[in-house]
Image (cartoon, rainbow, N blue to C red; front, top):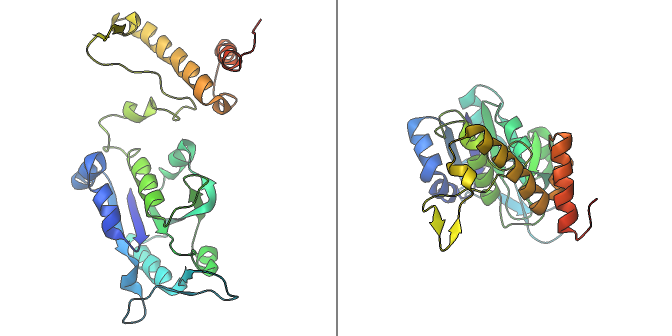
Length: 250
């Protein structure tokens, strides 16, 4: 997968996406991430990419033409239209399900807004969808773009050591991840559950599944309704939720 980021602060994005697992994956060629300086496509010697808004109002708006020129150049490089995402507080909230959907694209382009946003004509002509990372407003789209790029990159083959690294994580299957432990077996009087060093793989699998349901019911009961649960598992979840709410269960 190739991910292109259109931004006024490519160094900011590079500083994060060149480190740790994503940085190593970029070096190995498992993922291709490119950050583009929008000012390189400005039309004047001052490299201006914003102007005042028609109709008045506070703040400046990002110009359409530099964004269009940058995106069209990316299209020429990829020889197809990358799926263009505008990082915006107006967008739908990013979820693991959306990430799995986006992971099927070969080329994804992320547009980072700034100031009061982007000329609407760019959004209407080029943008495929708007995505938000939460119901709050940031100073720019770089942080959301890095969140999306990181979470999307790790779903690509070769980025993590094994698919199981993300398939068993929180949200991937509609549940939160089960509790995990490492050495020592007993820490400050607290022992890990016996089942985890029993060597019985099926019992461990069942324990982890049950703990995932309990964790989700306690911390994110809103996820339980859509989670793929058996009747017995749903009864367990309902009991946990009732207990958390101080209700008596039959």
